[in-house]
Length: 35
Image (cartoon, rainbow, N blue to C red):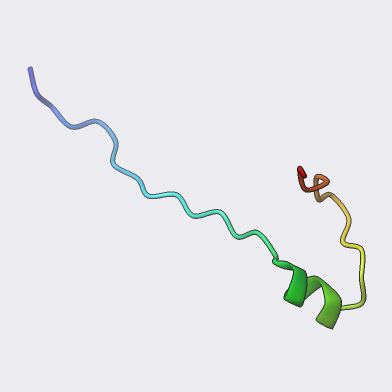
């Protein structure tokens, strides 16, 4: 009947290499980048 049930916006924050280097290297819970 066209009733809108849910509207949402999603953002994913992924640290880049510069962020990791500035904060002391390896961060837990991050997948390895693909080559």
